[in-house]
Amino acid sequence: MTLTNIVQQKRNEENVNLYLDNKYWVSLSKNQMIEFKLVKNLKIDEQQKFQIEQASTANKIKEKVTAYVFQRPRSIREVKDYLRRKFLLEDPELSDVINNLESQGLVDDTKFAAWFAEQRTSYGIHGENKIRAELSKKGVAKSIVTDLFDHSRSEEEIEKTKEKIEKYTEKIIGKIKHKNKYELKAKLSARLAARGFKFDEFKELVNEKIKLL
Image (cartoon, rainbow, N blue to C red; front, side, top):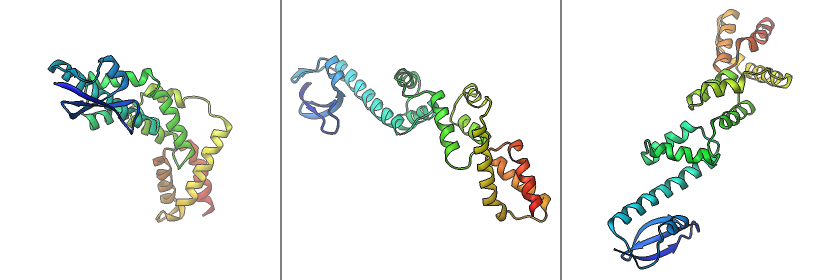
């Protein structure tokens, strides 16, 4: 077998397409091409062919997963699930990819948790308990979640939470079917708890709203 041509890719100048016996074979990064010392008209044996094909697959995975984590921050579990689903990867290959991403700072559950909590706090109606549960589903360690939330909240944070609770309460209270004030209070409290707010955060507001009816 002969490496008959090496052509730079148009869509990615860091990659080259390799042609074996005048037929497209695989693509590699330029660094990989240098590592294998590939030149035009080089004779390729079966062992070399296998190694180069393995390297080509690794390069494709690297490109895809890098694009995936650049779309938005990802938890390690999200990346693992993506690699299993997209490439059917399992250990040890799976761990190798994750370790490589971690060494480059492209995945970090502590940074992901902080970003995710900020997004949930800034947009939509999400209480702390709901955010904790969502982070847990994304595979973030309990210790990271605990460190993220177990601190004295600032007056600004407390006020923002109150504003969210009041805004959400105003939105839904008129839509809740009820037979009496007791049932309304119970249903309203359940809806707020489902949004992740703590009872101590909304009990006073709920009591005030019910009294005004």
